Image (cartoon, rainbow, N blue to C red; front, top):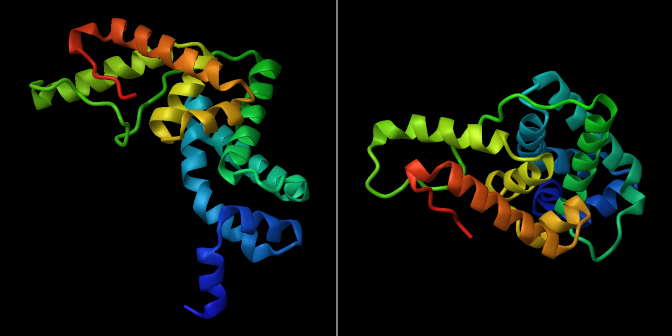
Length: 193
């Protein structure tokens, strides 16, 4: 690995987006490599497991990043900015088509725990029940859930992505946890805070 390549790999996201604003293709490629997979997973779940739509939205998101790189505000964090672009594209699609989703399939890397003492053969049943419960959430609550538990974002980052006050995100977290806990009472789900 040459010195220049190491510089790109070790550069912060915020530095890279500044370089993208100066038409640096390698900086853009580095950001794409860092975020394409997790962002695709987020879009795929928000867009009801529609692979083609998620791929289109991923490309549209990065196209907008490229077009708006010079508008990125110094002092801001790149990741919430990127996810807010993707989230806003999804919101526009919901409005345009007024679509209501199919099942969200939850990934293996979820930060929820099965109840202690539960048999391992219960895991598939638990995951199916959790997926069904998440699918019953409103779009606003589902977005918070996916950003927090799938993407492992902090509440402040989620607030920035969704363009809502931190208190709103906390309220949505409280209500979605309460609802999911009630719906999954049989499994005595332990919610992480």
